[in-house]
Image 1 (spheres, rainbow, N blue to C red):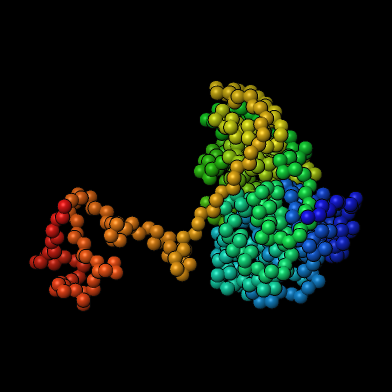
Image 2 (tube, rainbow, N blue to C red):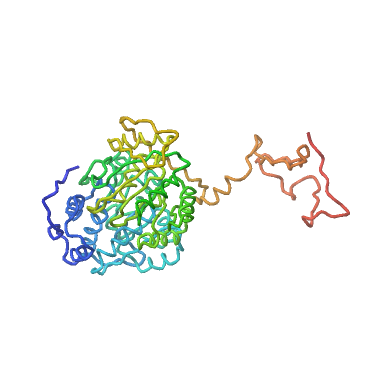
Length: 488
């Protein structure tokens, strides 16, 4: 792997992009490329594979969409059901964000693009793919669904992008990623973007990319100096009241608040609404329509506070977001960097405030050890924690292992749905017969099972030596009810 050094690039005209693409970038309000863009764009234009380490908010999306548009604009249009470039993202929100960037920067090109993810009807997505698309942005689950229904094919694929690969592994998508990679043609350009180059990421890269150019812009555990960070010690039961006071006292017009759970997000949004603070919750249990509406209302200023979980907030891109609040500290320290990275983007300043209770000391230590600094503690008048948070010390950080994906339950035909139903059947006893749960009130009375034959199958009525009684109805006959002997 060879390291590419960035040149002193002052504007996008020096990157080798077509004038139509540069004009679209300027129209979007950007004049000077970010460090990751200055490194990644020339490397991708060479046609070689790329591994890029970049935090959220560094401009990495444009770092691969701009050269992709440049390369695809020189080729033939996509055929029916075919895709020329595939961008795989871990969440719906990130897919929507990447898709918007593709449309924005490719507005003056004759390339077709589509975004596909779960939570919405699949038929409109299938219909759009029948005409073929040059660029497809997708989440793993919906992409597999579309492929199984022959709605999308990869015979003409030229470029494959795996965006936020670290999050993919954290969410347990590794098995889906490998399945998708096996569907792609061998001859293609591969681009892998991740916040870190962990051992797991490098292991994944072995089967994905060939002799890549490797670029990075900052250490994985650093937070931008443009974000001011501090925390407030508070009892867990008083967090909501403190947040309400901070919003009202500082007149926050826009803030992104992170909670650890979906129920916590819903509960906090309701409490804020009760205090006449416009708020909405966004998480994985919300429908895609509700999530899209909440995000649109937050961007437009119709609601002041957006309460989100880590997965749902992945891909939220709001220019000049003033502050991010950690209502709960994350379980995984790396998520802290991703959370506060929603503010302080594209050269803007931002604030990251954490409400920390005594029971979160372990998470606080992990976060501070990960970012390599002790977070400043500030007091809020009227709030003094009855259980103060102990003073923390920096320790060597050990990254947790990524979640192991559950093994798919498949039968001989490979259909997971049937396997799931089979898994719910009663377990067999030592003789290979299904055990029946006794009915309440009749634990000592059970139906006497028939003896299986040598193959383990029940004897059929035709081959049985005993005469068989034919039951014409499932309803018992009043005059001739069936009785079974009780067995001990």
